[in-house]
Length: 308
Image (cartoon, rainbow, N blue to C red; front, top):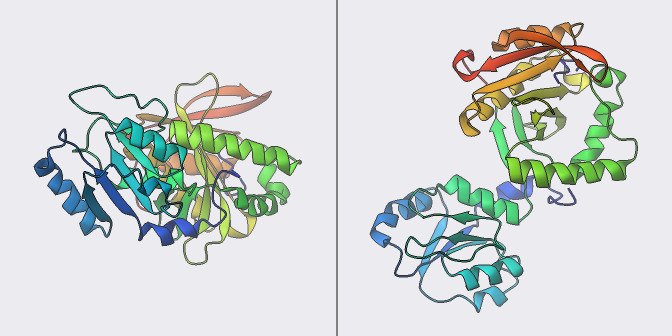
């Protein structure tokens, strides 16, 4: 639901930690006879050009898994025993399925069918998941949209203290422990399984949290729904449009959605105006929790030029 301009402990405590540690990642490619290293050379060169170290080895690496200070490693291997050991010892690992035989990687959260098409962004994302660090979703002219972490809750509760924030949307749980559980569920089921959810909006220059935005699935609908809120001191400055354009772009281009919906109360004129400005078209009026909401639809092909 759009709120207009009115409108877990799973992650690391410091969101900037991810950016600082990315520079130290080393990808260990544990290869066997099943890898065509000539084909992989292009990938390796590309990864190294993006300031990531890559090391090839045929060693079994089992001794390396005994080192508890291997947090900046990401191991890629088609050795299922090695992968399971890494996972059990909380070492970031990606299982590689061999084209010649089927391996048992059921214990692993991440498995790839080959190496040739892997992008560095995907590999770094796996490393961040193992390290419980938030992904950056989008960077706009003024904002950084990233996955939420538990330490964001203090800022969220401060933002929601303003009555205007909850005029058109639900409040946070009064019990912070319940809200923490909700956030953990969001991270595990939303971010990790679906690849989206409600994210945190920060100012790029100061890292101040100024709101939330993201995509969610509403029961009874097939289309994902966009929603956002901007803290009262930062309203009427164009942040809502800037952030929504970034979220829509991510939904269409990165997640591959063809259609995104928006639900807003008819009297929330600021949200209605923004929806139209973004290219949404009115579909119908529906009841949500006993209140009428106008439902708008935006198709990928109809989105106005994205500038953020």
